[in-house]
Length: 153
Image (cartoon, rainbow, N blue to C red; front, top):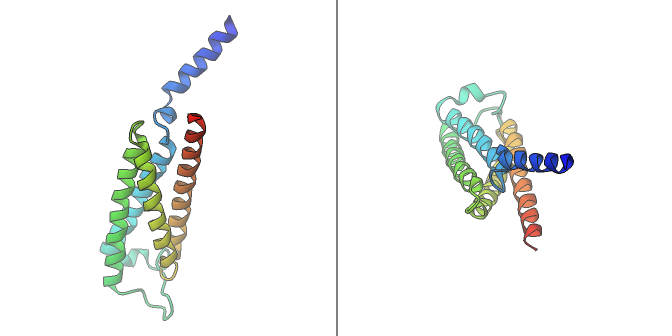
């Protein structure tokens, strides 16, 4: 009887755990980290690109940074992606709407990966970080969705 109580107590602790509140909580947390990264980098590109020069931003062919108009456009797109990451994270946290969060998360991550690929020319540091985060999100979402479909059978 003592062993059954221990197993039941462990199951109850797992149910109460933060990581088991929704089907894709870890992916939601990664989406919120992606939001923080994306919005911080986007705002920095628009407001203070000189602080990113040499570390995250490098001159492509001539050694000069891209024009401020290009940096503004990229920064605004990154801020919008950050907002979409938040929306995806909120939907992923929900036990009811998590599948919508999966769709939003995958679409936003694919767009982020394409953007990261294009950004390797002038922002290799940001591009590498963005690529890693986006691949992590897609992997978590694909794994979680696969696990959920296995549980439905």
